[in-house]
Image (cartoon, rainbow, N blue to C red):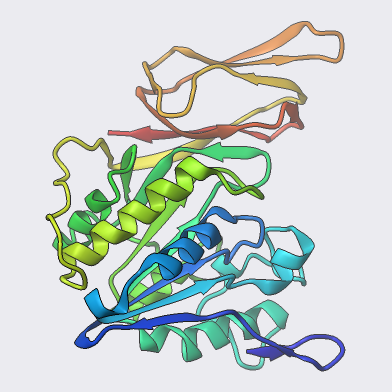
Length: 298
């Protein structure tokens, strides 16, 4: 995949389970952000427990798509760039661009479908939710198979941050149906999130006829947000976020207090419209422009 500063090859761990019967190739990748770890535990358990005699097709897992980030306990690649904003990368580009190009050229072409496992970033916490293009009938059913707290409709923008595509957008551009699963918080293995991710992947395999079993749940009972956005502070101070993850808030409801160094409330933030809390800040130290919460709108 590449070489480190000492000229040593850099590789990613790859797990493969090939069934006895033909079928699709499902790729599941984790930790393209190096401090988003729950997906690694999900893949470890899935591959330890899955019986290949019951599998049709091939399951490929990559429990650590960003080894430098994992080693440094950070979201970014070792050059400080967000790999999930660099696709399709460049073979003659900088460090992160070359790594993204290697993923796009050497990994993605093997998949018929892709699931990208994430968590919140440092200083934030997430619900268990799916990002998927709900206009795609297959992805809509696979999203529901995870039985998430909510689904965020997202087509996968062709570019992100003005620098490049996300992995999901690149795979989608390549004709590979892809969804993103967000499961919990960074730099930790959370048993309940891991359990839900594992069970969700099993239901996905059942829906794809890669395993036998009951059909997954439909989308009717799962909240679907048509859009979402983050709210930010406009001053610095100590932040207290009020609503819990998954809580519904009405327009105008208080969502956070900001206090100065002496404990006085200097700002109260309110919801600009009704919605549901997808994610929120867990870091009370807030400079001006710090994230408050991620609001999903139905």
